[in-house]
Length: 114
Image 1: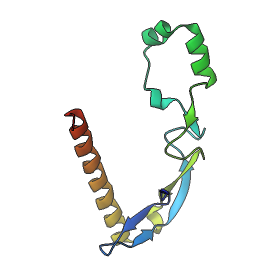
Image 2: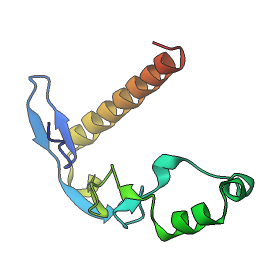
Image 3: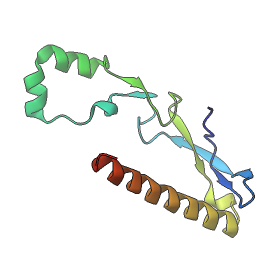
């Protein structure tokens, strides 16, 4: 299943409307196209517990993998609000709010073991 990377909205009829966009540096990988962020964060004590070999490998990018957000491209398409209609902006904001609420609900279910 292919992801639609370009900002878009879905009409009540189920049609996908692609929105005007601009490119920005990916905020997840800072434009590098890869990251080890999936590992989570390490405190200095945790890093020390892993040992110097792990630290060297970590800093060299051994554990990096392709960024999920930009598929390794280093840049992301973001909605260009200056070129959107008021209705498009409202619909996009409503969609984003719904997605955030849905993700929070799913996360709450996951924490409860559902």
